Each structure stands twice: as C-alpha cells, then as structure tokens.
Length: 61
Image (tube, rainbow, N blue to C red):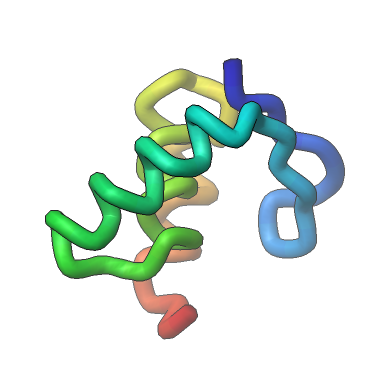
C-alpha cells in the first residue's frame, strides 16, 4: 500500500521496492515522469484529494 506523508507539494511517499518497480515500469510505458504517475495513483486511491490533482496538472516535474 502506498502511503503519503506531509503536504501534497512536498510530501514523502512510502512504498515497497516491488511497488516502486511496478510504478516505474508503468510510468515509462505511459511516457510520463514517475512523480506524475505516482500522483495519479494517489488520486485514484483516494489518498490525494481531486482538487489538489487539478493544481498539480501544470507541474512540469
């Protein structure tokens, strides 16, 4: 299970190495950065509120 700690813009994310490998591979297939892919996963899991995902869409990280 992926956990989010701190504020959305400056947070730390805890996950297993297996989860990280899966996310890295999926992000590469999608052609996006790992950080953007993790944000999308966190929004989908309900960990990161939708209104914050709108703020992060323009982020070029």
